[in-house]
Image (tube, rainbow, N blue to C red; front, top):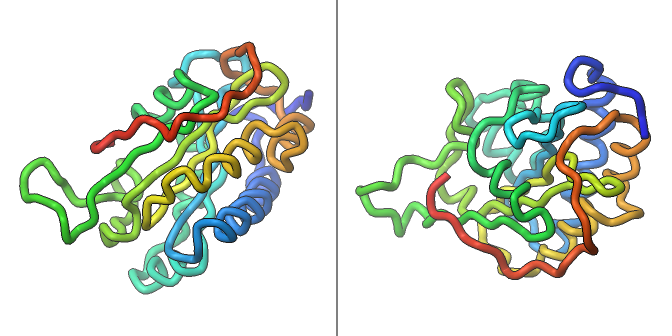
Length: 213
């Protein structure tokens, strides 16, 4: 296990290394899900903590289609804004509560939204981050990252169309596979926190859905 503590020891070099790995993962997802707008991100637990609120953003990568949208809105890369930003919200907690399953959230496309209880979809809930056109994120998949016998964070992807269960195996491979580039890097580099877990990885049910974040 590595020695770098989260968050105090994390450097921009770590950010760039994780960004490169996430680019590989995103390219792999595109081979199955296509090249419509999508993003992928990594969140990691605080060293020495097990509570599901003690986590931080480490990387965020967009594909070319989403990058074109962001540039058209004259907005900077959200990954730079959110580097080591504390994680807040239910997505992280819900994912860690069922760490061997894909946690799936879905929102209706703009054309099918009602005016009641359907606020504009934002990339992130925090103030100051840009709002995407609603049709560019209607589905989000999250799964716990497993290193040795500990769930140390989450891998998440936002998509402009619902992939059904087509990406489940790829999400599992990148987040919990013993030979995963992401798992190996985190294992070698960081002093990881997070809850311990037992048992083999189960094939996920095509996940619970959530209409509001």
